[in-house]
Image 1: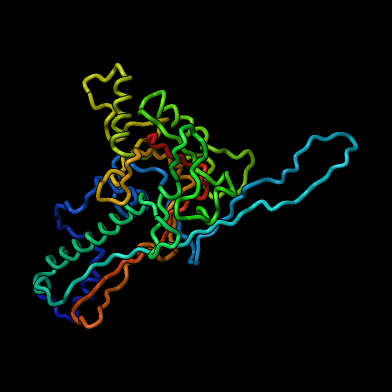
Image 2: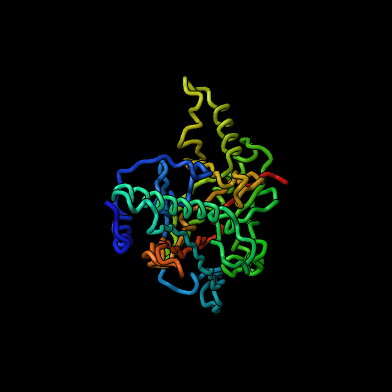
Length: 365
């Protein structure tokens, strides 16, 4: 039964979120895995899970702001009987803030399409496919934004501040906190310069080979030295205990699997024992392949063979309350009386509240 023009918008709006039994094959996406969708979105999770997902609502404001304590009182001293003590006060904090970033995707239909002269099930299945394609667009775009660093503080429209923007690489060989201010952002991350505040920096190192005495040894050092534990309780922004995940390109993951395989004498009948979906691990943490870092069509592609140690206790995705993937009602474009558009708006930002809790290694230049 065909739908009348005046009934089409209400029909689509009332059925767009209902479960439909129609099935199809989707070969539209270029990447094998989408970490933004699995960790922060409303999409499917990976079969091996994706622990420590963290997505926070923030009340609407012009900026996301927080405080960083960069020093202590400096009043510690040994004392004795009848000693004359002195005390002092100093400013302990520096303010940090980052702007929001907005994304949009849409779907469209024309009430005069032949589709709307067919039965309700056909109409619904087609609309659901268009909605699926719209969400694909969103997750594909956000996956690239998650790994491709913005180039300038004056960028317009503004891209989200990606993981690779927060966690900066360095060509210094030995491990150290050398991940300093990003290129194009002279004021530093969050408006706090690593030159002025040296502890506002992430850990870095370079490596030559994926071997036990090179990459693995430096990863172990980074793991230890980026695992800060406060001696005194306080109301900190993130959890006290680290929540690690490791991300890299396929060649590094594959070489690491080679290393595990070569060092094990008990593979049995399974030659792929260390190449399954939840392995390889490092200190119990999965090392995950990021297709976006390998894809030549992506702005996130990185020829430095990076390997990122992300502590999700201190890096998350935040969104403005009521503006998280907000699906708007159908609207009519100007001078197109039978056309309808549905837009999805998103206001959010990646946020690392403590840089020295993360590390990145790259192949030596």
